Length: 223
Image 1 (cartoon, rainbow, N blue to C red):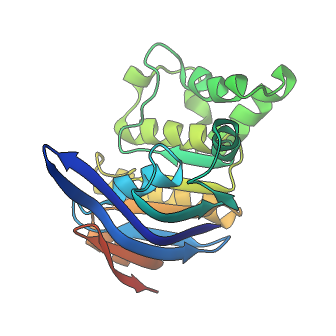
Image 2: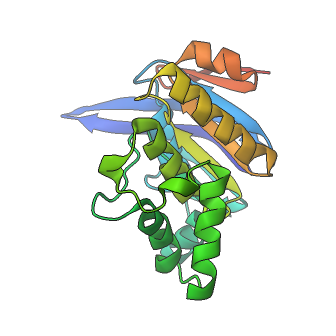
């Protein structure tokens, strides 16, 4: 499902190369729910960007869903991303479109038949408990509802893998608990989940296998 071997990622700051990830190796098998944790700046977002090929490693090998990412061509990357759902700390909803339109847009740009779109959108909305807000605009949503909408958008293509980058970082504990429950339900339905958070307490509460990054290094793999 996911495999990293000796992955490094460095960025140039003037004449100096600064490592964001240093010799990271691990494997995630199909059907796992894995928590990626560590303090802000530990390298979590950098790692997730590598997994959906928004960036490439400076050294090392990465394979996702059987695709070697270092050598992947543009069309192969596009095909891979259709099997990956991504949700961010900021919901990134399009402000001028309703919840329904935000989610349907993902299907339209990937060529889904019009006859399927409405059913697929409402399947995703029901999965996150947001059917009643389909015609609301992002500005009319609470932060928790906005994150639910973002989750619906991430799963509407029925992805094999869900990457969640601090999806509860901007909401209160009660709303965060609801989002965690939704993501667990998505996992139970058969989607592999990699959930990134800087909240160590949350990682403990989720009671799942946990990868701990510190200063760009994988310092612990437990559970």
